[in-house]
Length: 123
Image (tube, rainbow, N blue to C red; front, side, top):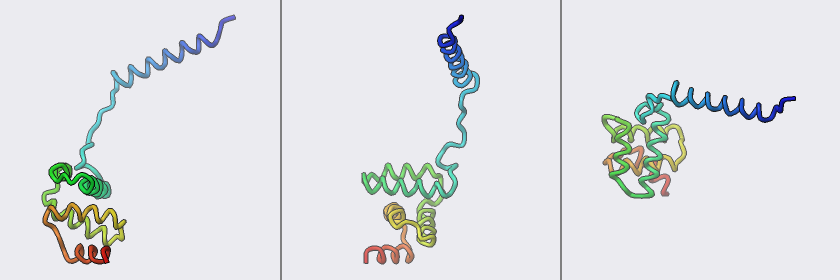
């Protein structure tokens, strides 16, 4: 009588080997449209919030500006201002809005809506 355990182990290893060859050599993963600029607008907003949070932590404006450039928005200051306005109108988390406002200041962006939000949060 044959022993099924070694035969099953050989079958498993053979299947695993074939799967690895197919996955890594024959049909490897091909990434496309994976740059930040291809993100859905909702995720671009979240990306900008994360950039703002990182900027708050390290204070490295050059790094933050480089990360924002990945969004490839033609008018970054206007885009950040618009994101802040939309976030305030949507009653978004105030912490997220503060992170964006942290990015707006070095960009030289402000508005009455932003100033009113800052006053309301501080007071």
